[in-house]
Picture 1 (tube, helix red, strand yellow):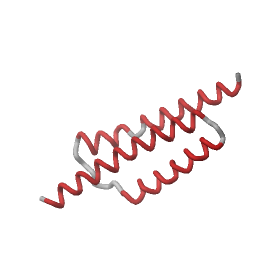
Picture 2: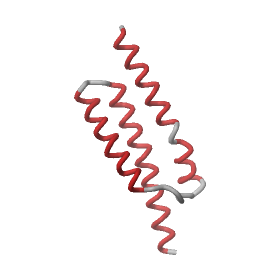
Picture 3: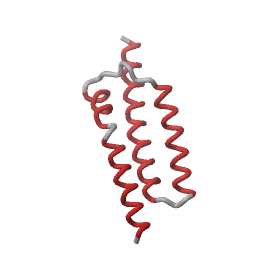
Length: 92
């Protein structure tokens, strides 16, 4: 039973981590602003999350697996949006 609570806390932390990225996604995809976003930093964060995902798989933690997959998707959405915006600006 204690393990279930631990995983629930992990899932809740993962959801909060994903919610934290929503303003950044809005800024890129809705407001079309990308100034101040470092693709190098986002890339390092993606590698770190990928390693946390591998760790979650190795320790068989559903919370870590789900949270890291979802966060990787959110960060990938930001990166794609920034690359798209910068590419369209460079062609104009």
